[in-house]
Image 1 (cartoon, rainbow, N blue to C red):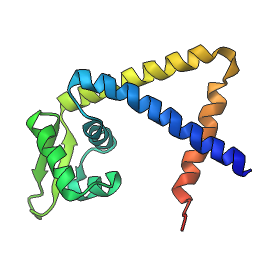
Image 2 (image 1 turned 60 degrees about the horizontal axis):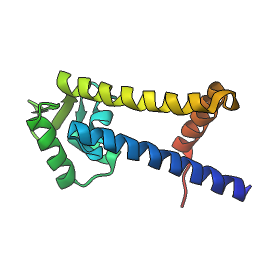
Image 3 (image 1 turned 120 degrees about the horizontal axis):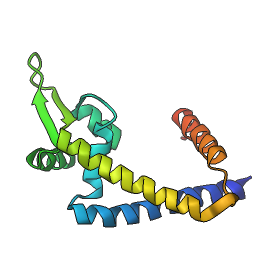
Length: 146
């Protein structure tokens, strides 16, 4: 069992690494970093989110996230505002320009993944793979390792 788990860990890590390499090359042409992509991607999952929530989800320091957000705001990719009732709360959301850019990036990643899956031909059942990966993802929410 340990050998199979070690192989699974290796395969997931390598696929992620290769996807990130190809994505990073694409992002360089768009003049955007992987860190900025991660922020845009997280912001797309909610209507609005606080800086504190985003910081805890991305596991970034406050200063690192502030620098990323400052640049994204300057590039009109993210909208930032303070809560009227509690000025300590800073909210963020994607601008239309940010959403368009993120969609372009995600479409590219989807096309890349489709090409890889197509190259596998009948040797891969995408429905079964998706079902198994979803099961792993859901189980990872409950996994606690000490």
